[in-house]
Image (cartoon, rainbow, N blue to C red; front, side, top):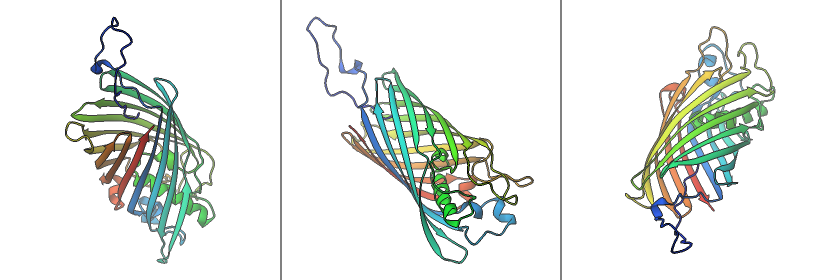
Amino acid sequence: MRRALVAPAIAVASLVATEASADEVVAEPLPVMASVEIVRGFRNVAPRAAGAIAEEEELEESDPRETQGLSVVADAEIRVSRHFRLGARVPVSAASFLFSARDEDDAASVGNFELAPQYTTDLRKGLRFACELGVAFPTATGDEFGEGAESRRHAYANLASARFRGFRDNALFASHRLGFVPMTVLELRSDDVEVDGFVKLEVLERAGGAAPSEALGRVNASAVESVFGGRVETGRRLSPYVHLGMQSWLAYTLVGEVKHPERAGVQPSAPLQIVVEPQVAMTSGHFRSMLGMLVPVGGPLGDWHYLAARFAVSLEM
């Protein structure tokens, strides 16, 4: 899934061997990649203060009205063979809450640990296909419907992270959910432009946790969310070190609902969310850094006054 680096030289075994040019060499990915991705959300209305729930009910004193948050996802990949890799992601969330009494509180949470075996193959020069099957284990702290206010706030921190990330990584932050995340990626690389496209599903199965009250509704045992997206970035010909890009995706709820409990007679959250993210990246050798601004286009995030910035650094070794 990660960009390959062109081999610096071609070794010739003997003078009688078939001649090979640098253009014919297939770039091999380096064996280890590590990255850290940080998303900072500037303002977000908390889950129970948005949508149909808040329209008909008064919030409890322990329910936050607004949330600002920070999420960090550490990612590592190891290449075990030419075509197979093993990836792992560890998410952490921190959030600041504003309550009805105008007091503030903070909470930090661990998300769902994910393992993802990956397969990649070069279809032709500059065109790579990749697929993976991620499994997000239900390790997230907190319970959105737990009796203790502290437990709910830990869950709210993870929920805020999912929203700040544009519903692209719900499986990493959904409390008491076991996630199965198949994904396919197509990457096109040239000196002029780099283009990526991806499709993934998040199948989220309920894994314990407290049930919401009858007034709030019920939590679906299963939820399926789809994410389709792509990215375009300037290539090395324009600048070898600085690259301008644009990324966009749409998240659509196919089955069930993981953002809110469902209640008979009450309209659920809008199933479609579109997010655009202008980016600027810097590369130097095996190191890459990127800064982006996540902007929602309509959908539930547009109604919740959402805005976030993403900063990521990666190193291939």
